[in-house]
Image (tube, rainbow, N blue to C red; front, side, top):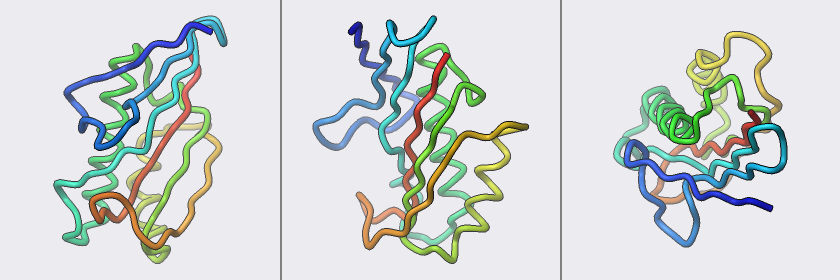
Length: 127
């Protein structure tokens, strides 16, 4: 397996023993990218879930770009949210990043997230 660590200063640095993303280049013609959960710590816990979700998706976009990928390469995403009543607002922002054929996804309500954020999103992309 050819594993490449992807890092960009355009997204928050990891706050623990993990990488922003890992690209496996021998898994498909150009590779698979596993993006760690992204948060918007600088915006939490103010409660503006749309602003927080937008920043998270922008962080994901920066990491995708650093790996020579884009949102259309995402095949799977996982959303973790502190309050499921924010589901509609999150969908409103998240959906703006996918014109058609959105990725498979699950959304899970959790008790607490790192840095007390309200939403965290991780993705898997294939090129």
